[in-house]
Length: 336
Length: 301
Image 1 (cartoon, rainbow over the protein chains, first blue to last red):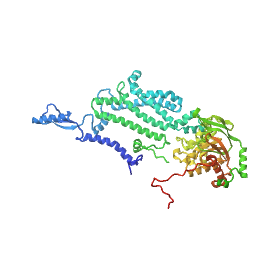
Image 2 (tube, one colour; image 1 turned 135 degrees about the horizontal axis):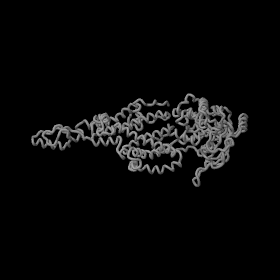
Image 3 (cartoon, chains in turn cyan, yellow; image 1 turned 30 degrees about the horizontal axis):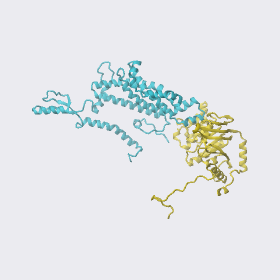
Image 4 (cartoon, each protein chain N blue to C red; image 1 turned 90 degrees about the vertical axis):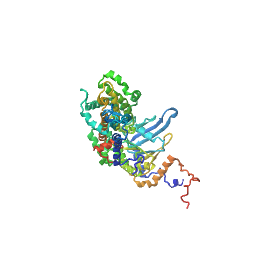
């Protein structure tokens, strides 16, 4: 079979293998740099200080300084320093990060009163949830109305289009002044970052509804309100759902900035704190965790979507459907 | 032309056909179109799509509209459906002026326009539901209509699981479930392959025989129009005007062997002349002189 034919879909098995590789490859590169001492490793960790007066076991020094010191020591006939090549502290090995996934959860916070990692994560999820929910409660209906009725679109869209270009974090200071320093401004930033995009995206989706369906409904006697609730709404529902999934991804990217506003909280506070303590494996673990939560939520929403909208033709299987199928959530192929 | 001499006069009717048309004309007028006009745009860019179109359709009559592209036949049927407004004249259903869409006129579209989120049964019940009928009655009704178009086994399927012909049968059942006075069909079989098309024509004739409904049918397939219709309204283009209202001199019920009936061919020839003119455009001789090495007479040796 020709794998490189333009536009050709692969067999499920080949797709699975390649999807697996897309995660395996970065991991392999990372492992190579971590475990092969001749790859990179720009520093030396001192194991035995020999006759050196400056180098102590456990110290990490530039490789050049290490060799200079040894050259100096050997010219005097002293015992040389022993050491092993290591990577900088900001590049922990995969197994260290892997371990951090466990240890980060069970390690007590250094300062009493600081949140545990799971508390930080839960806090972040709540901020996202409220920001996104508030935005959707107003943004989705407004977007649908804009898409359905031109006068409403003319009234709201130009201004929303204008605000959209203002970066949400720029409202940070303002949000603190208005809603205080706790979670208010963080939720506000996620709201601002999501809402204006949301209205425009949803209105576009609504506008994309096949007009012929509206006309067909009219000839069947549907009234104005029925056209909105019984035709436009169900007609755009799968696309609307897809829009919200994508927008939720954007909300996650605003989270990190939002959590820096006012008092640092949530997963961002954890990341900053851990990098201050130079426990970089925890930093990596936390970043990867955000990715995993996002992926997990998206897979769940995808599975839910295929249950909610059985009339949708199967879209091109992506990584999410692949994983959900692998996990056994795949919906049965529809009969054609 | 020699063919014209061989053809019978398309206006000649057997006593049976004559009686059929007398009976037809004695029935009440369901649809009355008077001096209907439609101009798109304003000022210099304005184009006249329809001009002074007048005709009557009687109860349970089957009328087709044919004409060259740009004759405004789709515009006409959309005005009758209430999806478009006329700029002059009037159209009346049961002597009531047509203003906007209404359930008295069912429409079947070429693109099926089934609601993808509703099952086959759900599509058929859509109209009655909009009328506020109780769901029990509506479901029983839907079963009957689906049984009639032979899709009882598919009532819980979604439209994307159906073939084109099945989709259009649902489309017809959906429109009929609303019990319209007139069924407006805008090239309903245009997207189907020839075989399915012939099948659908047979289905439609059966439905029309057994259901109390008047049909106005747009097509660009002249054979289809002759085979199905009582009368054919021929429109000319730019602007769209009534050229002739042709009575089809063929007995009912129609059978496929009538396609070879000399009267069928006579009507067919008349329609051809009306639509394409006395001397229709023919393919020009292409030039194959010199140059390309693949040129060569197929019957050279």
